[in-house]
Image 1: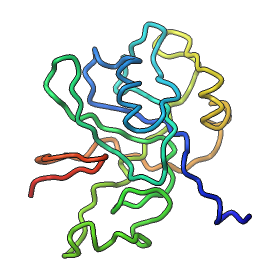
Image 2: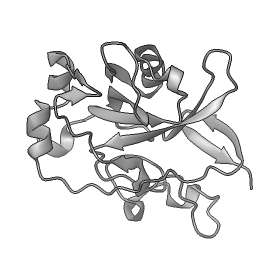
Image 3: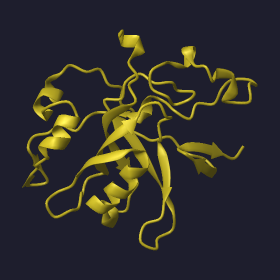
Length: 193
């Protein structure tokens, strides 16, 4: 067996879900949205069950053979449907055209298919999907931040080890404008022209 023959399908990721109402940054919401992205390993909330930061952090086991999902339309507690945005910590190289991990746009097999094969391809994916990992000091908003050993191991060891590794991560602070969104199917976004 050689490395090329090994089929890697599942990998753990921590995602940051933004544009949620404050009242919805809960363990239950994280479990529900996270389950649309993969198998939920952990939802990072305080002991009170609510996260008061800018985003809700969820650890998932994700199928890396599928396209990355960067937005989901959700309805929460009788509110109007809204778009929530997903960014990935420690995201490896991926294609900005098709959104799949493991190759760049120069090596993409779907290159001509993304825009009907006409003109320059529109990118629905970009470096803004990568986000800096959360630095773990042990405290989160005044309470001791505890994680289960199972989810810690699934993410490749202790957080202390992960934060000491020298990693080059691109960070773009703003999520791009969606424009006129018409539909989303299996994580794919279609915008009106």
